[in-house]
Length: 238
Ligand SMILES: *Cc1c(COP(=O)(O)O)cnc(C)c1O
Image (tube, rainbow, N blue to C red):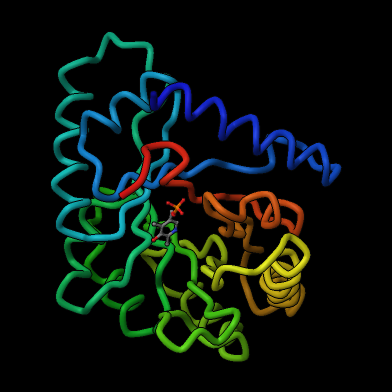
């Protein structure tokens, strides 16, 4: 089922890219495996899926350890590359060490204090933690994320932290009533992304615009997403 679903999602991504006159290779698929177990992840990996997203830190760390142990036990398998883990959920200060020690990416950084702790706690033997800033693009009151007008200043500060590499922006807009409305809200994130890159405040341009989920990935791709985060359409309902 998971393998079949992955094919359907890849087809959706390709179709959306063609419709938007974009190269399908310009959009990465992050499989959001929250609430599903390591076996589900391994099944997706058997079909070539590499990047996985987790919302809940402890659940994510347990799964990362289980999957990495499985990978170490199966060095002969034709998995071209090891699994790559993205933290996409809210991070409290007391959880930054777990994140810094186990994840490869964090997409949910929305304040400097959390970024500083992640940089300080990133173990020296690991590559820099890859970071996206979560932007509250539509001002949703219940959602975390830096306000759009503060994103550029935060990006400039995060980019200076030694053990982090700033890769881009992530957003989770409220569900939109239709395709046109969804495109418009994603376009705001895309415009902010371009604006920060053009402002000349970063040592290196950001290359990742993480937006689009099961319900709205076509609109996000239309607006310029380079990474869609898909859970339900791959693993089923939660
Ligand atoms: C759960 C989640 C997703 C995946 O959502 P689906 O609708 O299941 O595809 C993507 N991004 C974040 C931040 C999430 O929490």
